[in-house]
Structure formats: structure tokens, C-alpha cells
Image (cartoon, rainbow, N blue to C red; front, side, top):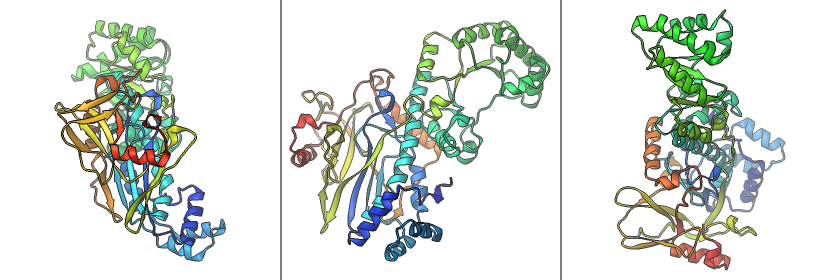
Length: 481
């Protein structure tokens, strides 16, 4: 679906609430909402924020057509004054967000909205679905790229994605998070992502033998071609036929770069045997790409075994985030304006983890002098940036603290829209990817590891902690985030 046709991508109760706000005279009352997530998927140590570009496209084009108004009227939202308001709807509020590719942590705002309540309410569903999907895939891609080390991860999952949109936006998010290329042609066209492609087993089956199939393919695609060698017998016929075809078709033309792909069987064993056979044939520059239901743990295992693999093709485990396909972002009211004063609001719950953090807020990240991230702190928006010695509490063990002395401070949320006007210039995808790599490199390896990562410190400022305690009546140890 085109991003500029998403005005109606809203839970129906949003329209019901907005009609209620309108009828009760609250439509122009300003509200503050925070978008955040409560837990990193796959028990990881951090997540990667993605999707801001699509949010900007959505907000820039947000309006309601006459057929949208007619539909709402037919569904019982028949207050003509409210429908007239929707007919002239344009977003007029403020949005602050972390740039795409930023590493983020549970319970800290990654996007905030300040807008008249109807505007802030109507955009909830779209903001969540865009951020939840792309941040999920970008986070999964970062895990796989970490597992692969210096070897490329290739996103090859379009046919397993949950929709055409999921394939395209998933490829975009995967590239931001760490993949090197995609097989999805539309994503390549739309976002200028590097493309990758080999061949299907059907190509090999259409010819009388593998050698004939490989020769025909190399004649038509001589540069950086990759031959699928497991259609019949990987070691018995696939590798020998590929080697012969490369020697006969490419080497006489002075082309030495080519590759083979393994898509089934014992990948560790077959990659080692294939490497030895290719080297014996004088094809030391021939690369080996592997696929077949790979995920970060299989990639990690293959690397640990010393398998001579040059790149990893990943499908459903990446494009669907198969192991845990929910990011879990939420959108909660944090404050309202009354007479020009910001009044904090809180959501209480039987589950302590679901008690929200009240007030209009900002997020700071502290770095040591080498550029490594030390901790994040959530403050009320009118608090000043602290300098000098500063103490951060461990979110998991409240008796542990971290005292910061020599540090640099960065405010994570940047202005995207002010009074409905977008002031943020969207970077190209290569810049976003480079920024994400820099962000990940700012984390200690203990936080990036796949298993039992170190818990990164995210604390509330003293003022915000006091406010939350006053509004909940709970002890500090019960609501650390």
C-alpha cells in the first residue's frame, strides 16, 4: 500500500474517541504521547529504531478524502460537524524522535508527540505499526550481522514476508540494521539498496545437465555470478559441474570472480568439502554463499566451526523475525496542557512493568571520552543537562549505581515536526546505515552479544523519579525501568 493512502489505517476506536473529544470540547486540548517499547525481542541487549522516513511520508500526506468521510458516516460516525473537521484535517503538532538507526532500550521514548488530542490520537495506529515493524526487522538484522562478523548477510526473504509491503519495508529495515543487500527488486528500485540474486533449482532442472545449465547462466551473467549447486548432488555433480563451467566460460574471458550457493544438507560439512574441491580446481577466488533457514544462532555456529563461508543468505528468520515476530511498541499519554501548564498523566496497572512514566520528557545518553555509551537517563523536558559527577542507578538492581565523571552528553530526541511543519531533512538510506553502524559500535561487546547480554543502564532523573513515586505511591525499587 502506498504510504500516502494510510489515513484510514487507524483502529476504529480512535475515530470514536476523537468524535468524543470533539463533542466534549476537548479537541484543541494539547496532549503529550510517548512511543516506547517494553522489552527487546529475542532477549537481546538493545534494539534499532527504524521507520521514521515512512512516518514522515505518512504525516506529510495525512488527510481524509470524501470517500473516507462517506465511509465513516455509513459506519455510524455521523456527526456532520466532526466529519467536516476531518475533511479539513491536517497535522499541526510537534513530533520529536530518535534518528533512524539509533540504538534504543526499553521504556525510553523513541518518539514523542505534542499535538491537539484528536491529532495525537488519530495517528497512534500508523505510528505504532510503522515503528514496530521496521524496528523489529532492523533489530533482527543487527543480530544476524553481529553473528556473521565481517561476512555479509543477504536479505532473501521476500517470498516469505507477510505482504508486499512487509517485503519492501522489511528489506529497507534489514539494510539499515546490518544486511548488505536484498533480493527484493522493488526494494532495490525504491531505496537503492544493493541487489543480490543467484538462481533457482528450476533453472538447473530446465537443462539436460548441470554443466549445461551453469554454462548458459554464465554466458548471460558473467560478472559476479553465483551457481546453485545442490539441485541433485552437491559434491558428486554440482561442484564439479560448476567448476568446469567457470573454467570453460569465465576464465578464458579473464573473469575470475564467481560463486556457488549451498541451499541444503549439512552446510558446515558441504562448505568445507566444496572449498577444498574449488581450490583443487584452481578456483580459489570462487566464493561460497549459504542459505537454508539460517538464523543468527546457525550463523554463529557455522562461524565457530570454521566453515569457509563468504556470505549468508537469510530468508524467513529475518524478514518475518521468525523467532519473536513482535516488537511490542506502545503509545501512552504522558501529559496534557492546562492553561499553558504541562500537567503529567500516568497509567497505573496491576503489572508494575506497565505503569507508565509521567510528564513531558527528554532522553539523554552519556558517553565516555572514547565514545562508548555508558547509560541513558530520562528527564523531564525542562530539566537542564547535568555536568560534573553524575550518578545513574542500575535498572535491575537498585542498590547498584554507576557514577559518571568524565563524560559527554547527547540528547536523543530531535525535532521532526514543529507546528505541523517538517523541519527534519530525511537522510538517504546509506547515511542511515552508516549511522546505525556507528551507533552499534558505541556499545560495549557485552551489550551486543547474543546470549545473556549485559543490561544497559536506563534511569529516571531524580525529579522524574520523585514525580512518578508521588503519582504512584510506590517505593523506588518497585518502578525502576
